[in-house]
Image (cartoon, rainbow, N blue to C red; front, top):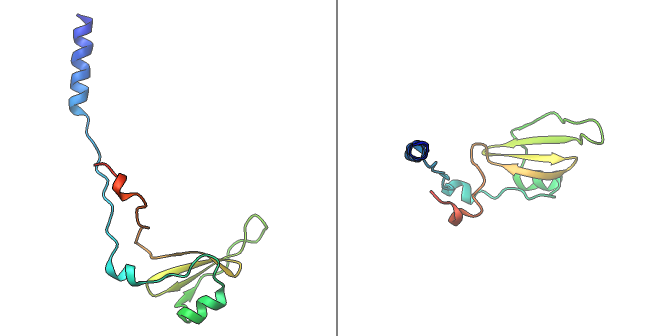
Length: 106
């Protein structure tokens, strides 16, 4: 009797199980045309190539374990610097492309 009860509970649990679907947004055509600064590029080179940023954030970090981090905001993207070198450039609201999209299983 206990075996039938356990089997019945397992079947009921399996019937309630659902799979989550992962949705990866497509990269827009405008984003594909935008060439962002690469890691290691100097501030001077970024300014020479992209011009004066629309705004600059105040530098953060004051200790060796907290290096100076600056952010320059351009129209459509932001560039992050550690001291005077690019550490990352991002398009707000646009996640990076999925590296292994073919391995995603619904």
